[in-house]
Length: 124
Image (cartoon, rainbow, N blue to C red):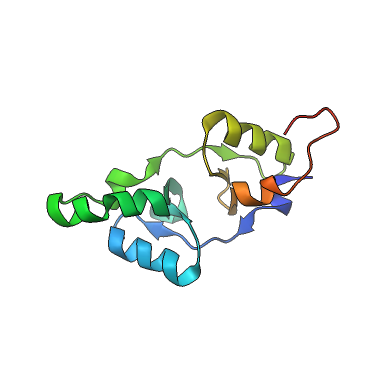
């Protein structure tokens, strides 16, 4: 199965200028835990998780911590036409919760991968 079959197409995204509080609210309203961060031309520049944002909320109010300080810069990206085993191996190897196809057509989180069977060779 290909990555593009499991990825979330056209995900909600934010920019580095989005406040931490706004990003948390976007996640809450949309029941999501991951947000791609885009720059000029909708180019992927980072990735934030709800856990990252919650950790940074109070420091952002006191010490001026910004979304850019919290985001995962240069996130791991994959070819949407690759097999899901490739994404699963990357997610496991780097101990991350998601990855993005290189063209930023969508995101792939660990949840859909967790529900898929292993390949015949027993690899994820």
